[in-house]
Length: 155
Image 1 (cartoon, rainbow, N blue to C red):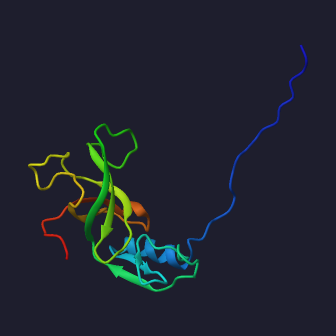
Image 2: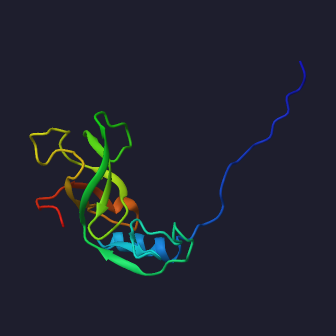
Image 3: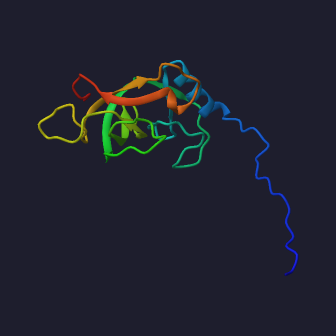
């Protein structure tokens, strides 16, 4: 039998990535329970913020503070959470447009399953608010999840 040659292979990325002035400010804000979006060239507010405008590629820098409430614009129900998912109980992955923003943020929604007779159940148009993580570190997981809010939609 021929001799098999082998060599160790170590896959690594020996560098640190900077989050930059926009994403860094967004993550730092989350640590302090503040959500920041950014104003685009056309006046729209993007959340999560982007460093460059998706329409004309202009560099963006005008950060906008947003409230911790919003509206579910789309969702997908997860009846059987897998290990290491954000919640151990059934939940929805949801796109949430925060009040004052023009784009939606993908995150976890901790709400009852879809039910047309339950006003707090998962649905498009549901008013939600952020449930903050007890311990925050400047990561998207500082938002533990969204949950139903007890308020009426904003005009």
